[in-house]
Image (tube, rainbow, N blue to C red; front, side, top):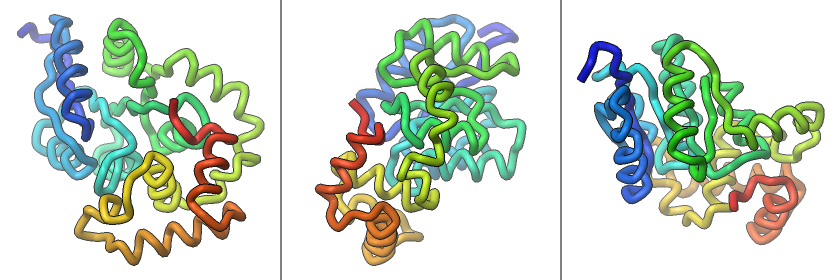
Length: 214
């Protein structure tokens, strides 16, 4: 390991994805994946313990999730360099991650060269967005407030995203600080704000407005 090796903390709740990304990043001699985790809570704990140069983190995970983890990490360490990793190229998710302070945002389907470039760019103090994400952000900037999902709170958006992705209420509530009852409360509030009456309508709306990943 040379003195300029970039220490990366990798957080993703899918073991296969996590292992694949770790292997791909480790193929670059300038990058060292110092630890991996599977939740927002892991991200916070390992960041405090290891002080990585770059945090590469999935957004849609059990527990507090990636977006909340970004907020908490940056609250304690404003200089932390975080790259959001997601299946979403557009909709409110990229906007939320960038607004919360992520220095980069890349799609899980991006080539390994792009992922390495993102890590290197953010490590050097720059910002990095996948080309599709950047394009969508530019062209949708004037329409952000028109996206119905922008009406939701951070917690409501997190829960709605998980419901759209097929997570059960019991899975979403897999966290000490939130109960199934609380999840349902946020869910019903989201339904009211979005003007819908069921999760089926929620999925249709998510498809229409780009919340549902490919």
